[in-house]
Image (cartoon, rainbow, N blue to C red; front, side, top):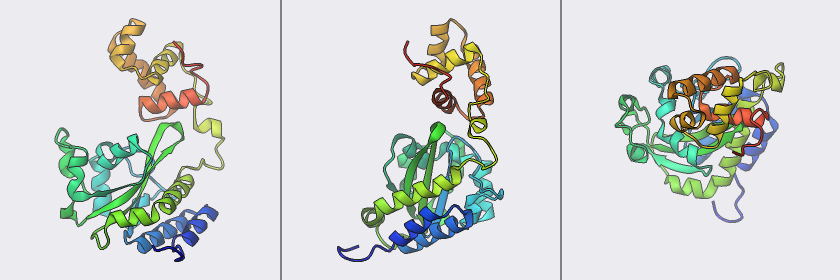
Length: 262
């Protein structure tokens, strides 16, 4: 995109900023994909959740974006969110990045997990690659928005160079719509406001927040590793989250943990 030329994404990003309607947001994301030559959007709101992200009507965003039923069902059946090399990059970065399906194993080797053989974003499935925007949401959730292509008609590096800022804004705006709380649900009820954690659960989560492993926590509090995991699993259930990191983040945000100084 040369200097002085109108930005074709600017009106689409503005439209996305104005809407709160899921259907309209999906249509805009598809339009953006058509403009940049990566016509297949994809949205993951939480890489710790094995299920695909769902819209308010119960359908997955993958369905709304046009991904096939077999693709979606296999993805959930094999819990591919949990081993996604794209998600792994998103956990450690908030910068937009490109990827090519032929390089996916090199990005995050999957040999140690038998589910790796089910990985879907491959040349054999007519996927060339894409451009992904990591988005870090409240409560420790790692999310992303991607635009994917079956053929690389234009070098992905050029798309990133020309549209990085606009795509980053579009991804954040879309995930704001995806992650917004239910209007009928009080914010506190959706998080830690109603959770009643035991003293031992709070203690274990505090050490998680300080980066300690289960075995280290067991040594610190003079309990067994299974006991530590029991307390952490109880805390996760009470806080309605999928992993210990989310539980610690939510409890810290809610003020349950207090000052993390030991």
